[in-house]
Image 1 (cartoon, rainbow, N blue to C red):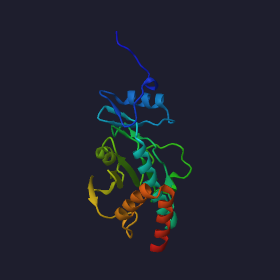
Image 2: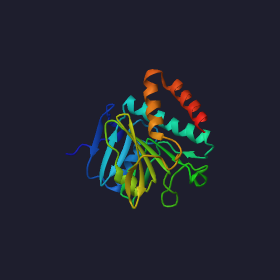
Image 3: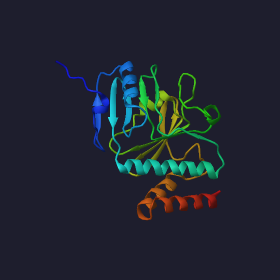
Amino acid sequence: MPVTLQFRQLSVPPGQRLLIDDVDWSEFEQILAELGNKRAARIAYSQKTLEIRMPLPKHEREKSLIGDVVKILLEELEIDCECFGSSTFKRREMGYGIEPDECFYIKNHKLMVGKDRIDLSVDPPPDLAIEVDVTSKTQLDAYVRLRVPELWICDRGELKIYTLQSGQYQLVSSSPTFPRLQILELVAEVLAQSITIGRSPALRAFRKKIRNLI
């Protein structure tokens, strides 16, 4: 006789992930509803496979730092944005569900002002998404389906910038959002300094540097 468990009964240790095969779309949505929004676990859904992973402190530290770097850049350059953090992006027609580590509406920020829910049948994808890979790899196919124009992936402390070109992601050396700045070098410096002098001093030094550059 099969045993039925509720997903809130499952415990995924930090740094580990749980893969569940043959999950159809309705089951995926039911699982999302059962897990709720107030959870530490992250969800990814691709080709009927559901991944539930629990991030490590290293992951949370780096994604927070890079997200703060983007916020400082937007503030100092006086670029308006709407930040949607790790919101769930899903649509049956895509066959994918994904939760970026951080995401920003920049060109399309006016369309998202005051929105509490994202409906991809009418809402655009975020203009910039950030992923930090520590225990698993970012599913590029999901972002292609979502049509996010700019994707930052930090893997082992190294940032890579991808832009969507002709339906595929291409590795580029500069950010279209911040074309005048050496983003790769700036992020690497902040990440390194955060380890030696701490998060807050590193971000204060970064803000000062940006003000001098602009």
